[in-house]
Image 1 (cartoon, one colour):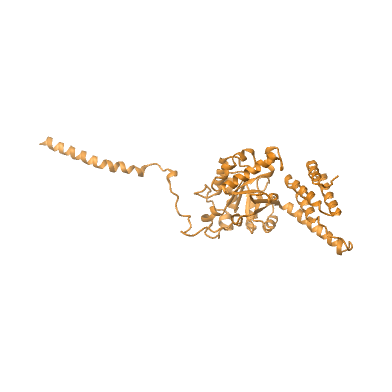
Image 2 (cartoon, helix red, strand yellow):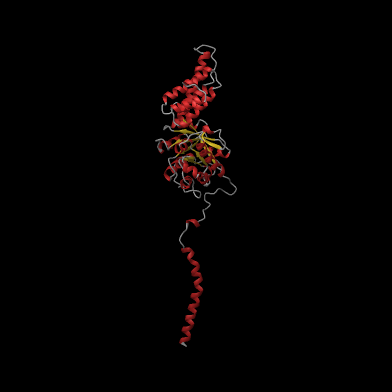
Length: 387
C-alpha cells in the first residue's frame, strides 16, 4: 500500500512540474537583457495628430521656398557689428568659429543681443559634441561644419545637431532653448529637427570622393563646395578643368540626393546652387564707405564747391566692390573675381571711368605683393590697362 502511495505522489509531482515548465519557460522575457536597438521611441515630443511643424527658422523657410538662402559672414568680436549684419537683410549670419579666435561666450552675447531678424548661425571648427552643442545650445539655427571628408564625420555632424530619434543631441538647455527660441510655435524641442539647417563643407579630394554618400545621410541640408580649399587641396583654381570637375561633382551629389548645393555668393549665377555665403562685415564696411565717398565726390563735382557740369560716374559700384573685396584681402578668390568683373565692366565705360578703375587696381597691386602677379594677369586678360 505504501508503495502505491509513493508512486502516486511521485507521478503527481512529475505532472505538476511538467505543467509548470512551459510557464517557467515563458517568463524569461522579463529577465532578458535590454537592447536599445529593439526599443520603440515614444511619442512625448510628437505634435498632435494632423498638426504640421511650423517653420520658424527664416533660413530654413527660405530654402523650402526654393532659395536663394544667403548668409552674411561675421569675423568681428563686438555685438554692435554683429547686430548691424543681422539687420542688413541676410537670411542667417555665419559667425566664423573655425578661423577666428572668437569665444563661445562672445558669440552667445551676439545672439542674445540680436537674435534676429537673420537667423543665428556658425561655422564650427569640427564635427564633435562640444563644438556643435555649444552652437545649438547658445541659439544657432544654422550649423556649418568644415572639411567633412568621410561618411563617419558627416554622421557625427548629424548626430550632434539633431535631437533623438534622428540624432544624439543632449537636451542641455542653454539660452537657445530658454531665451531665444522659447516661444516658437509647437515648442523648441518638438520642432527643432524640422527647423535646423545643417550644411557640410566639402573641401578636400577625399570629401569629393565621398560626397554622394555624404549627401544621402538623413539630416544633411546642403553640401558647400568650398571654393578656396578645393583649390588649396587640388592645386588648381577656378576655370581650370580639374577644379571645375570637383565643383561639378559636389553640386551633382547634392542635386541627386535632393538637398541643396551651397557656395560663395559670387557663384549665384551658377546652375544648381541655392544657398550662399556672402562677404564679411569688413568687406561690407569698405563697400559702403567707398560707395558713399564716390557719391559725395559726384555731388560735390556737379552741384557743390567743385563746380558744375560733371557727369556722374558709372564706376562707383565697381570701385566699391574692388575696395570691399581687395582693400584687405580675406578670400583671394573673391578679390580675383572682383578684379575680373571690374576689367569686364570697364570695357564699356568712358575713358575717365576706365582710368579710375585702372588706378584703383594698380593701388591694390601695390598693396598686395603676394597676389600682385595674379591680379595683374586677370586685369590684363580682361583688357584693363594696369601698367
